Amino acid sequence: MMAASIPIGKMIDRIGPRIPLLIAPFVFASSALLFAHGNFVTVMISMCLNGLVFLLLMSSAMTLTAGLVEPENRGKVRGFLSFMGYIFTGIGMLLGNFFYNLLPQLPFYVAIGLTVPMVIIILLKVRETGAQAFAKTD
Image (cartoon, rainbow, N blue to C red; front, side, top):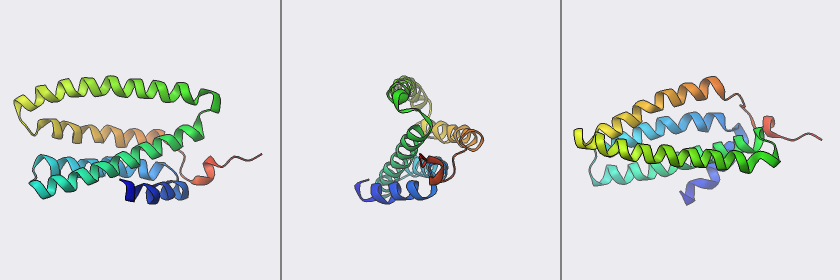
């Protein structure tokens, strides 16, 4: 993650947050497949890919927040998003345990399936496509 953080940040600055936000679910899906059906080497590759997914999602989300939310409301928005993220993480852990008991690979398949609505939402709702969209003009 440390080696990839600067290039990913520069990529987001250059092309905007939408494309990295679209890349992340596909990298996650491949990472989940490697993890669910992998051996030691593929699980290590999967963990590296998960780090890239985290960088792509978080950097893009922070860029979108900075560009679309007024400075006085950014803390409220980030706090609300973090709160909801923790709620859904808890629900995911409970469901993941239930799914794992049914079939050990099932939580990964469900996570891969949930990338489809994520991609659709990004395609339909995220409109900022370039770094110039976030440039402030005085």
